[in-house]
Length: 292
Image (cartoon, rainbow, N blue to C red):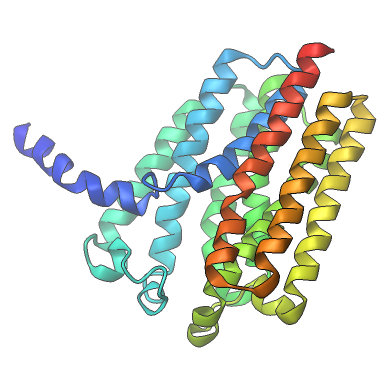
């Protein structure tokens, strides 16, 4: 027993690193839209149980997704400056151990889903499939960000199913809005890796868009914000919700200023600032529903 605990203690730093729990930016990017969905589906009063289930589920599935991504990219990451010191390319964790860790995280997430309802349980395998497929799309298409957007947005569909027992049209509108946003911010992220991705043959929207990258990010951001406005119009949301969208739009404008020269560090700063976008929209939703 002691030897097992000692081994877990010894391996814990590597597990934290490969799951990115030491870098929780991605957790927020998946969590904010999930919380949007819970607040919209429950008209401002989501169940405590679903808040706990989906918050923990986001942490577990995002962590598993990071492990799967690193396993899929293990032969490429060593050639990319930003990723060459990750555990797999450096040999600090073996492929088999990484896959076992990912499976354990997904199993724990599925246990949480069992405390929801039949429809949410039926939808859960789609989330796993999208998360597992995404890393391999970078070899097949210049649109891996689209698959990531679908993977990150599927939690919205599950959240509506858990809260309402169904998936209404507004759930799909929010799904589309988040997909557009994800493609926009992950293109910013891909701009950071573009010089190395071109060398090793990894595809991305940043490479596909080329010199039109800033314009396309702007178009995606506008479409994302417009989709949220349509949602607000459909559900008759008030001033606080629209103030949240306006604040998020201001952050998007600042991102455009940051990436104007395509400096790699500035692009990464723009990507990281998307957590502010998600939080501002959530705060607008919470305040608007509280005042309704």
